Length: 323
Image (tube, rainbow, N blue to C red; front, top):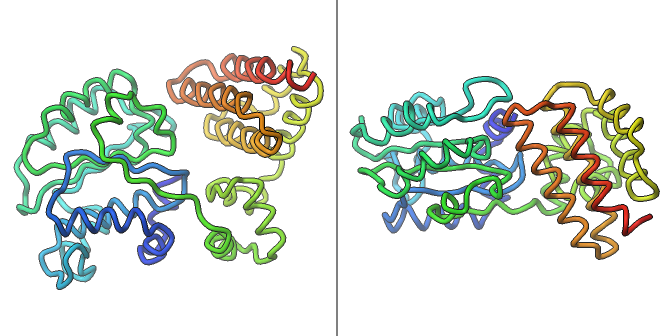
């Protein structure tokens, strides 16, 4: 999970890897110009949630000797890091693999925004997987974004910001988290036990610097990868007849997170070939198909039917170009 991966990272490492995000947030704190809403964007595993908690520590800390930085040792900083500070709220799905409902916006976010601060340094509400907000929840959230109250600041975190309504995105200050350099990526892989330079470079190129994908592949999650390699090759060389589509759906099973990861693998494999050949339009169509499928899976659509439709859409996007 993103949350676990993020919080296991040292803040110093994230600051080194994400100088732009750190510089933006430090500048905001030094100017005392905290906005009502932020959108942290970037692929999984870059430290977005950990940086959101760092921002909360820096905002709440009253012992720091450096403007825009938390002291990291006082009781307030320790409370935030442990996730028990009364003015820090994390809004997550109520069930594994579920979505964030309109009820959570009404019952959790709005009351938290309306309440007075406990310690007088403002409030931070963090939505670690904002792309899981349903459309109804996002529309309800708009009322909070349009009419901010008190000293509350909402931080939406998403690796799929395009899943958010344009009206939601436009009301947030975007804080981008950049893909890692090869050197930073290699350091991450070394901590996963991958210390061969050529293997590091291959993973970097294959996963397009996606840390989350690399973590799965480094743990020998090869069966899914090999299956998706065959699917990608078939899509790019010939076609997927209906029996083969059914067979692929059978092999992927019914576990939502595993299917979403397999689709991410497939998109990475298609990306490597399509962009190398300059086929941006075809890749954009593939991205739309996969993104729509993941959104549908998150919204509890029929998994098998959704997966089969996705494969048909991918085939349609690529058939004329490669067949």
